[in-house]
Amino acid sequence: MGEPLSVTVLPGKRPRKHEATLTVYAGVPGLIPIGEMIRSSSAEANVRVHTEMLARQQTARKVLAQGACVTHSYCDPDHSGGNRHLLRPGMEQSLVDLEARTIRGMAVVDIDRLTRLSSVLERFCAIYEANEDAWRKGKEDQLFWYCTDGEVDLRTEAGRDEARTRVMVAKREREQGAKRQRRRHAVLREMGTLVGPRAFGHTTAGELIPEEADAIRLLADAVDMGQKVAPVVRALADKGFVGRDGRPFTHRRVQVILTSARIVGLRVDGTTDDGIARDDQDEPIRGNQPAIIKMDQWLRIKARYAEASHSEAKRKYLGSGSFICTCGTVMGAGWKKSRNTYRYSCLGRGDSCGSNSLHGPWADAAIELLVELALEQDAPEVAEPEPWPEADQLARIETRRSDAKARRDAGELDAETWLDQDLALAEVVGGLRRSQRAWLKAHPLAPAGPANRALRERWRSGNEDQRRSVVRDLFRGFIVAPAVPGASVSERLTPVPR
Ligand SMILES: [Zn+2]
Figure 1 (cartoon, rainbow, N blue to C red):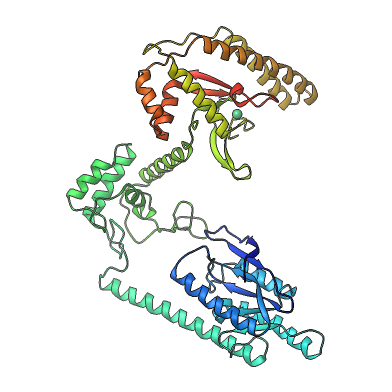
Figure 2: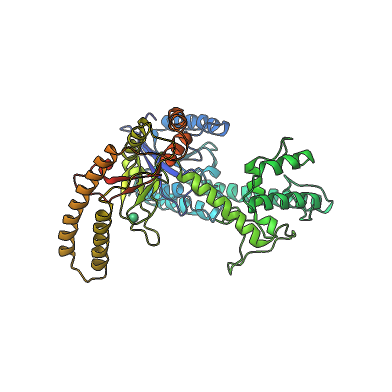
């Protein structure tokens, strides 16, 4: 097959972990271009993929011997062929391409690789049936077909029937398998036997296990009150409450237990945002297990974990949490795929302006420079920074600017007049900022708090968290002026020392 010409991601109804793709290979003159259906991309390395690759190679050799070559490879990694509720973008695309004769046939290792649904099989059959008709009348060449099992052949009526039978038999077997499994579990449950991994605090039948429920309440109280979880986990481990590996609960395990809707007596659905199963009216469904903690506490705990993960995700870069937009919002950091870099930006939520952003690496470089400057000064341990004499003037102009912007937004000022004014004011602001920086250099920053030596050590430790903490110890933040043509990133920053 050689190197692919292109790989296209086929959008599905919902985003999935592994996207459906179409890989196109160069055709060979004289050979019939055909499509194949695969389940996993070659990027995944496991036994299943390996077996599949071998099967594909074998198929490729067989079809080559029959005058065809695979030019289109359709892959639906996260879509089981048997689920009628899942759209299979790869399979749908193959139908489109086959209909358009972009490909002139299909090669499948096994019919259930093509589909496990009779309805889908019929769509393929219809195309082949129409082609058979046209071919017999001499209007079109016959479409190509290859299946490892020679009896399954969509080009002939007998072969199509064989395919239908296979799909139906496979479906019945799957249903019976699932039914057997359900029956076995039900019987085991009635006998009080555990089926599968049991959730902490409840039996599989949904009965409360009092001592485990108590442990959950202890953990819940600790998290709810913002206390450390580790001592509670250790105390529980001493009492014999440990994970399946015999070790104390990990923080992750505690989080999983405490954020599960199971412990407030609701039915769990891992596919929803809040993990709660809901009925048609969007009402949470009661589980058959009793609640262990109260709903309000559970919601607070969920919020705490959400907040923690939020701030963790936000504090990734050196300037995370330190850049303050002129509108007063702390700017967030985010990766910008299109620019292949990260940016700090005003998020535009609530009252924030949402129209101010900074090139991430440049902004961090500017902070580094300011920190280095501050660390060079052998300042006394505690000192009040001297106020910059022109601070009032800058504040007045900033107020005038935002007033003018508000009047423009309210329609009291036409856009052109406003822009003229604003550009003039921006120039004045730029001049003031320059004089402010010159003044700050002449009047060294005097950090309050830890001595510079300790700060320097932390700064040079190379540890990102430590470096960020130095920035925060030295500066309350950096006020970021909106971008003005010609202004560099560092010119837009006004450091606010501690
Ligand atoms: Zn803003």
